Image (cartoon, rainbow, N blue to C red; front, side, top):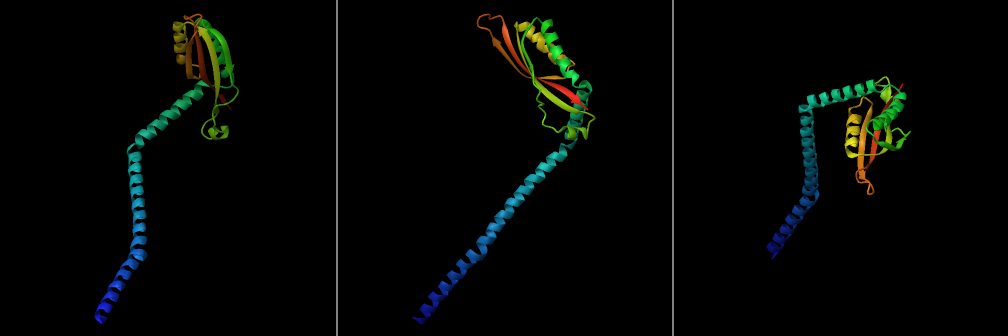
Length: 188
């Protein structure tokens, strides 16, 4: 009986030792290994991203140069705040040329760029500003298309943001045209 009891005590101590080893050594180390494996996976993914950026570095640099050139061309076309009034006059002249009736021409005084002019002047001589213009016209479809074509080909620093064409139920051959534009100006 003594031997049996000693054997059971040894088995119990062995089980307690194994449980203690699992609880105090294996599980914490396993958690740490899982965390390190996650870190390794994250670093491997970052290395792949950096490799992609490095492979595309030439394309990215070219795209940046193209954007800088586009911005410089925009600065060349935008002279000062008087160009904003020229843009408004041009829209009115273009509408008359294409037999469109200006129902509403509303320039906004709120600059759409969220760039601090001082930050822009670090890189350029002037700061660029963008102002929305709401234009409501009435006219025929073909003339509207010609108006939009001429507006997009104009040397005026303007960008068409949205266009809505609505038909008049009373006069189906007439359209109501709602255009949201962005006009650009530069300030010293």
